[in-house]
Image 1: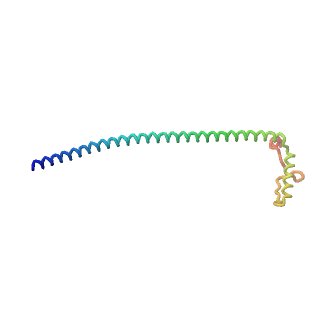
Image 2 (image 1 turned 90 degrees about the vertical axis):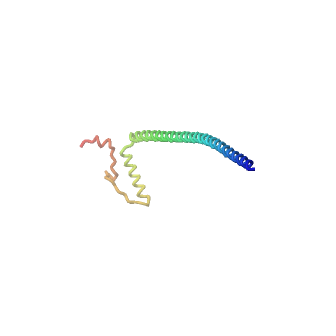
Image 3 (image 1 turned 60 degrees about the vertical axis):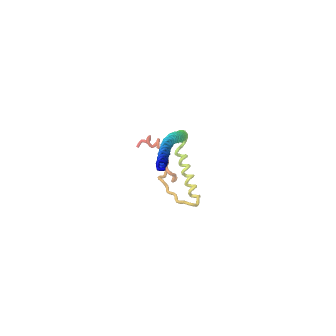
Length: 145
Protein backbone atom coordinates (compact mmCIF):
# COMPACT_ATOMS: atom_id res chain seq x y z
CA UNK A 1 0.00 0.00 0.00
CA UNK A 2 2.82 2.37 0.73
CA UNK A 3 4.36 1.49 -2.60
CA UNK A 4 1.07 2.33 -4.34
CA UNK A 5 0.96 5.69 -2.57
CA UNK A 6 4.51 6.48 -3.57
CA UNK A 7 3.78 5.55 -7.16
CA UNK A 8 0.59 7.69 -7.16
CA UNK A 9 2.43 10.58 -5.64
CA UNK A 10 5.24 10.18 -8.14
CA UNK A 11 2.76 10.08 -11.03
CA UNK A 12 0.92 13.11 -9.65
CA UNK A 13 4.20 14.98 -9.29
CA UNK A 14 5.27 13.95 -12.80
CA UNK A 15 1.88 15.00 -14.16
CA UNK A 16 2.14 18.33 -12.32
CA UNK A 17 5.61 18.96 -13.66
CA UNK A 18 4.40 18.05 -17.17
CA UNK A 19 1.43 20.43 -16.90
CA UNK A 20 3.61 23.24 -15.57
CA UNK A 21 6.19 22.65 -18.31
CA UNK A 22 3.48 22.56 -20.99
CA UNK A 23 1.96 25.73 -19.62
CA UNK A 24 5.35 27.43 -19.65
CA UNK A 25 6.04 26.35 -23.23
CA UNK A 26 2.56 27.45 -24.32
CA UNK A 27 2.88 30.74 -22.50
CA UNK A 28 6.30 31.29 -24.04
CA UNK A 29 4.92 30.63 -27.52
CA UNK A 30 1.99 32.92 -26.82
CA UNK A 31 4.26 35.73 -25.70
CA UNK A 32 6.38 35.32 -28.81
CA UNK A 33 3.27 35.32 -31.02
CA UNK A 34 1.92 38.38 -29.21
CA UNK A 35 5.25 40.10 -29.57
CA UNK A 36 5.35 39.39 -33.33
CA UNK A 37 1.77 40.57 -33.75
CA UNK A 38 2.50 43.72 -31.81
CA UNK A 39 5.61 44.44 -33.87
CA UNK A 40 3.60 43.95 -37.07
CA UNK A 41 0.81 46.25 -35.82
CA UNK A 42 3.39 48.87 -34.83
CA UNK A 43 4.96 48.70 -38.29
CA UNK A 44 1.54 49.08 -39.94
CA UNK A 45 0.78 52.07 -37.72
CA UNK A 46 4.08 53.69 -38.64
CA UNK A 47 3.27 53.22 -42.32
CA UNK A 48 -0.18 54.80 -41.83
CA UNK A 49 1.29 57.74 -39.92
CA UNK A 50 3.89 58.25 -42.64
CA UNK A 51 1.15 58.32 -45.28
CA UNK A 52 -0.88 60.81 -43.22
CA UNK A 53 2.17 63.06 -42.77
CA UNK A 54 2.96 62.85 -46.50
CA UNK A 55 -0.63 63.75 -47.45
CA UNK A 56 -0.62 66.64 -44.96
CA UNK A 57 2.64 67.93 -46.43
CA UNK A 58 1.17 67.72 -49.96
CA UNK A 59 -1.91 69.65 -48.84
CA UNK A 60 0.25 72.33 -47.22
CA UNK A 61 2.30 72.58 -50.41
CA UNK A 62 -0.86 73.04 -52.48
CA UNK A 63 -2.11 75.74 -50.11
CA UNK A 64 1.24 77.53 -50.25
CA UNK A 65 1.25 77.39 -54.07
CA UNK A 66 -2.30 78.76 -54.18
CA UNK A 67 -1.31 81.61 -51.85
CA UNK A 68 1.71 82.42 -54.01
CA UNK A 69 -0.42 82.40 -57.18
CA UNK A 70 -2.99 84.67 -55.54
CA UNK A 71 -0.31 87.07 -54.35
CA UNK A 72 1.27 87.17 -57.80
CA UNK A 73 -2.12 87.83 -59.42
CA UNK A 74 -2.80 90.66 -56.96
CA UNK A 75 0.64 92.15 -57.62
CA UNK A 76 0.04 91.98 -61.37
CA UNK A 77 -3.37 93.67 -60.95
CA UNK A 78 -1.81 96.47 -58.86
CA UNK A 79 0.91 96.90 -61.49
CA UNK A 80 -1.65 97.16 -64.29
CA UNK A 81 -3.67 99.62 -62.19
CA UNK A 82 -0.55 101.74 -61.67
CA UNK A 83 0.14 101.74 -65.41
CA UNK A 84 -3.44 102.88 -66.09
CA UNK A 85 -3.21 105.61 -63.46
CA UNK A 86 0.08 106.83 -64.89
CA UNK A 87 -1.34 106.96 -68.42
CA UNK A 88 -4.38 108.88 -67.18
CA UNK A 89 -2.11 111.34 -65.35
CA UNK A 90 -0.05 111.82 -68.52
CA UNK A 91 -3.18 112.64 -70.53
CA UNK A 92 -4.48 115.00 -67.84
CA UNK A 93 -1.14 116.76 -67.42
CA UNK A 94 -0.97 117.48 -71.18
CA UNK A 95 -4.41 119.12 -71.26
CA UNK A 96 -4.72 120.64 -67.79
CA UNK A 97 -4.25 124.41 -67.64
CA UNK A 98 -3.99 126.80 -64.75
CA UNK A 99 -7.16 128.58 -65.94
CA UNK A 100 -9.12 125.35 -65.75
CA UNK A 101 -7.80 124.73 -62.25
CA UNK A 102 -8.87 128.25 -61.23
CA UNK A 103 -12.31 127.57 -62.69
CA UNK A 104 -12.55 124.35 -60.63
CA UNK A 105 -11.47 126.23 -57.49
CA UNK A 106 -14.21 128.80 -58.02
CA UNK A 107 -16.79 126.05 -58.55
CA UNK A 108 -15.68 124.36 -55.32
CA UNK A 109 -15.96 127.63 -53.40
CA UNK A 110 -19.47 128.21 -54.74
CA UNK A 111 -20.49 124.69 -53.75
CA UNK A 112 -19.24 125.23 -50.18
CA UNK A 113 -20.90 128.63 -49.96
CA UNK A 114 -24.29 127.26 -51.01
CA UNK A 115 -24.10 123.95 -49.14
CA UNK A 116 -25.64 125.37 -45.97
CA UNK A 117 -23.42 123.27 -43.76
CA UNK A 118 -20.00 124.79 -43.42
CA UNK A 119 -19.83 128.19 -45.03
CA UNK A 120 -16.41 129.03 -43.64
CA UNK A 121 -13.85 129.47 -46.38
CA UNK A 122 -10.13 129.85 -45.99
CA UNK A 123 -8.41 131.49 -48.90
CA UNK A 124 -4.93 130.76 -49.98
CA UNK A 125 -2.77 133.38 -51.76
CA UNK A 126 -4.91 134.86 -54.47
CA UNK A 127 -4.48 136.71 -57.68
CA UNK A 128 -6.68 139.22 -59.43
CA UNK A 129 -10.35 138.98 -58.44
CA UNK A 130 -9.63 136.89 -55.31
CA UNK A 131 -9.08 133.70 -57.27
CA UNK A 132 -6.51 131.33 -55.70
CA UNK A 133 -3.25 131.26 -57.57
CA UNK A 134 -2.52 127.99 -59.23
CA UNK A 135 0.83 127.67 -60.91
CA UNK A 136 2.14 125.00 -63.14
CA UNK A 137 5.24 123.54 -61.43
CA UNK A 138 6.96 123.25 -64.81
CA UNK A 139 6.49 126.96 -65.46
CA UNK A 140 7.78 127.92 -62.00
CA UNK A 141 11.21 126.49 -62.81
CA UNK A 142 11.30 128.30 -66.16
CA UNK A 143 10.57 131.77 -64.79
CA UNK A 144 13.50 134.13 -64.56
CA UNK A 145 13.92 136.19 -61.38
